[in-house]
Image (tube, rainbow, N blue to C red):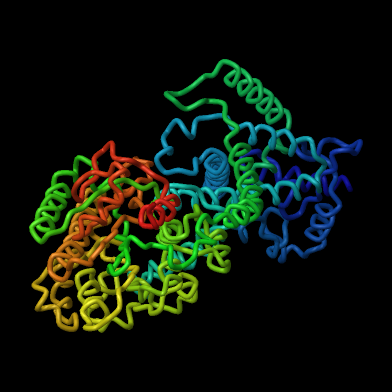
Length: 632
């Protein structure tokens, strides 16, 4: 480089030289225009923090500026086409540019810190969560400082993408905990994404579904891009200030070890954390368990105590009876035990017990533990009917493609019952229905309903029960019926909900157009958890009344009703209760039917006592078939 060139550089420095693009006062060695990649292992001065080192590209730019005519040069001696940083904006507004650069760096640091420290559950997000020392961040910073230039850039980009993916997974976990009270399963839960989008469409309409899905996609892409850019920017900053960065990493590492050893906490939150390592470790264990679960389930499904029982010895204690297995959506223990709901629900159950008793019916109630909470009704239904613990979609698929006999299959195997299903929540092809051995299935399109949807619910419960009476139970000269009935009015989001009307006024369901208009708006309801809980309680009350009034109105000496909840509602309603208990009740007119389960220890009436027996839902099938099988 010539002496003239050096003098021109000095002139640039003293006559309005442009501000750098960060807070360091030097050009970006990793990505800025006009500088070469720093070579950490050369014998020249450190290009990542020092000045005065010759640069071939800079020399070429300077020579070009020298060769330009005076008319082509700016007052500072550069060509008018040379516009360093943001098309020359940083040269014109150096202080503002410096402020923007510093602000961007601060935001990058905040984003990376957020990604490293944010928990995967909403209720764990608090101020103390973000003032911890993440072991992963300290180790990563040390690694990036130690790597050579090119591997460092690659590592920074890969780390940024990976950190973004972990953050996305944490957000997904937050949603799953809010709905299902469990984290997202990387092996088994992908099918639930489609179910979720369907729920959005049915609750908020097609526009709401499209907007929500688009927003999620944009957030996903933006998060990956921003975390990557943030990690790269912070890496460049550390390299330019290597001595300071190195000392900082050493201090933070020492502080982490000290805090971990001494158990230092802010409130209940440990200052030293390795949360991301534990988070990923749990995910690896989850994937392994998911892959191995298929073999475990296959072994469990091969054991069936009634597989070799002759048909004429099955369910002999119920011959000639109409047996109805009825699921009430989201009817969980919270509806009975929660102080905010207990009084109203108790009144409905007492009223139902009294009216049924006046009609000649007695009832017994207990508790079952569901395999799911918040959602996943089909998993609970198949657990109850199959006698196997169906806790995930993989098990459900394995079950419905196997020859495992369910409770409904065994009723059909006897040849003594016509088996039907009333499933108003089904709005598309349901091939699994054949597996359950039902002679006929009535879905939402075949119940004769011409009224409106109530958010997710296609058919109000009272109409579903009336349709069952019209299509099956009320027919003359029929054979005994075994029916699986799923009442859907108490399905999330519980707004708007129907209310009981005179059974004679149901007609084709058109009356529900007016009733829906009188209901609440789910968008408004879900702004307030207390309103959600209130609407949930009302929905449960409506479902119970629909069922008990049907028995009172249409039941006879041969009616046997078994009804239960399929799972607890979402955590918004359970308010921190992590239990999975649901009520189960047997109602019968014939005293002999209830005498067969006298040794179960269940509570008289529709409301189970708090200390009533509590069984796994998968045990009900065998207990029921044993109780109503041949005796002595």
